[in-house]
Length: 166
Ligand code: RP5
Image (cartoon, rainbow, N blue to C red):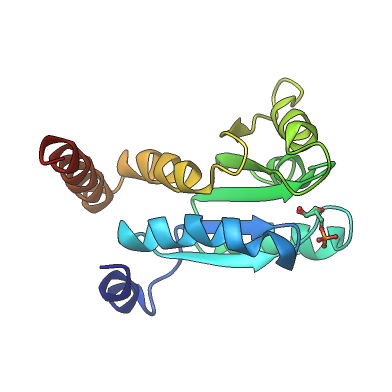
């Protein structure tokens, strides 16, 4: 299903920009991309860091927004400032995914991501919640994209069916 959706989305401008702070995050973060692909939502994934590549991060956010990205998902571990940095440079919704990549098992990144000052919100999902970040991004997009709403309805029906037949 993901492969078919990926083919269908080839060449389409991404609606969701996924950023993550390090290549070491990718095993978790790929789940956000997979979920969006399953829902038929065009997206792109970039490794960018609020601390190690701050200028490139800002440049990406500006370029992506101009190219039509409507929602950002920003994932990071440790002192996780990526989602906040993205939210500081766009008015588009930003979803933060705190990652359990350090000795504090994600409590550090959860607090760093969720505790934003008023006016610069980051909608923070649970630790390692990459799949839910994708579903939340899809729910936001569904407000203006009927085809995404349809995909979410289908996914909910499929989830219900799995429970009914188990
Ligand atoms: C964060 O630091 C990254 O998001 C990652 O979770 C963590 C460790 O990064 P690496 O040292 O593995 O590159 O910025």
